[in-house]
Length: 310
Image 1 (cartoon, rainbow, N blue to C red):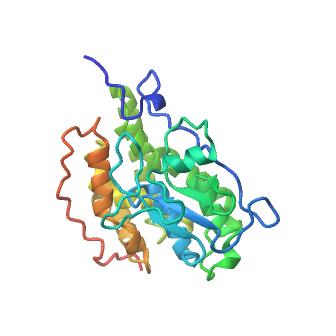
Image 2: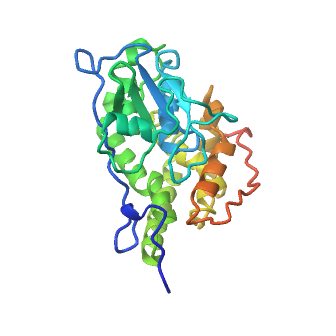
């Protein structure tokens, strides 16, 4: 039986594993540095479909930075030319640079760039280039260098739990956030099964952990919770079927499902969850996985129901 090249052949190893490319731009915004924290200087390019970009939007909202850092949403349907700026419901043209495609931001920043164009992107309007395209870095900078420019907000990286939080975030990234992609983009059975088993081992562990506390670290919501949320909220709608992560659904986990509803119902959070963008992106864009491009109507998700996590 022939084995396909996968959705992103350059990020596939011989064993059929998906190996995500490294983020290309990792400059840092800091007081006194080349990139200083200033209002109206930086702009986010994001997709509402993308879990990585979604996390930066949540942190931007929680820390009161929406009036400090602008945002433009790309078309959720990505073709061979990459992410595009088009008028549509919930997305639009680029008001900062007039780019038609996000790739233009990458080549303007590095003319030799030949990797995959990804979101989120933090653009520096003064320097006319990308500062950073790592969601981890961007969230850290929002919570650090930009914090004084916003309206306060929760401490997302508390010092007293730093080592444990870092370890749990790494586990969630490796086996859950990126784990669903490793399952969905696997091109060999062994690679797929390995990713799925690791994913559900972690979900089972988190289900037990959430039986002991409302959130991952007790009664406070930290960045690790939002990291997990961005995958959980897409799971039953996309990852369960499209990526074949189908041992169980999130709705089959009482604690994880209640936890998901709890986070979804936090003030303002539902505003950045767009299931139309999410489903159209995955089911239309990933033509190697879903060649017909048919977008499912379901599932029916009741995220406004009582969460029972009080």
